[in-house]
Image (cartoon, rainbow, N blue to C red; front, side, top):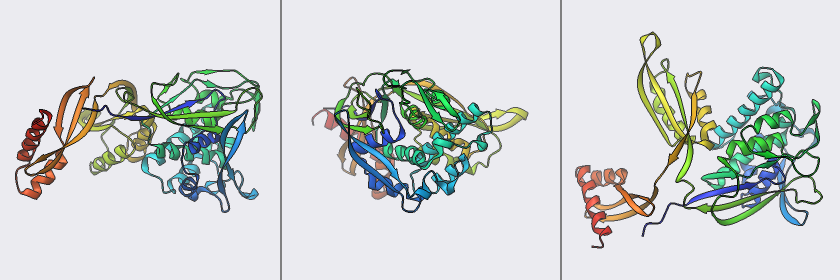
Length: 404
């Protein structure tokens, strides 16, 4: 009996908006360790600063409120006390984070910097992040990326976002809700305005949701495994000021999905870098990476770099390409992607055990292939050609599937 592949799904219900601390509170409520989060971010935290998760009530709903408790002199300071993009990136690079987490966090801050630069008409390195550069928000952004990675989800879906109404006080004065940066970050996402005259979606919340969600809409079909609630700072009248996060699994989450295709042409890079680049792109979450020989302008031989990646990992792949190669431009587009369900079975041969990767569609087996690494290992151990191990594995699988 072939069982379909199971993917973990995270659904974010933003009926009361979303902020960075609400998202982290909900993720901690799902079981992410605040102690391990403190350890992961220790290099960016001032001395005496601690991360705290408290149980609170919001209109009768029990939720986790996340906060950064810092000495007064350290409040609003991180990464050396500066809030420019370069110093924040340096702070992230100094942490002991996995490559995908660091790349994603840097990509989010770069996106935030581009939005702020466009709004204020200044170069990106002259952007001073103000509210979103404060210690709390730096922790929220980097911490949320780390926490989502800890959950190991394959798909993140968000409800439409309730942005609130009225005005919000900023360092630039009183602005309408949503504030300009928030509105720019929400481009392409479904939003609505309902409830009290407050800012319900912050720039940090907008950045994190739109940077991670691959789809927006109602809760997708799933088997619910767990739910968590992250509390906002206000206790709103008439509705619980919480972000609900639902963790579940589905047998179809990976079957029909969108992917991003990134491409760039390179004719001026040391060819030794391409092997290293391949590894870094896979670390950043790429599904496939391949190189094609091309002829470029001025009759120069070059290389077309093609990266296929989940939508959620697109920014990390972009960051990797710009950081590790000489390219100054990357083309990217969304494509539809359909995958067969897959699972592993192990078969016994006279040479040893070999794993078989079995692909199915609608419960029907379409392909069964021996794992080459297993075949190569047994060939080396037994001193036989690898093709003989491969053939023995296929024969053993056929006998097994026929019930012999």
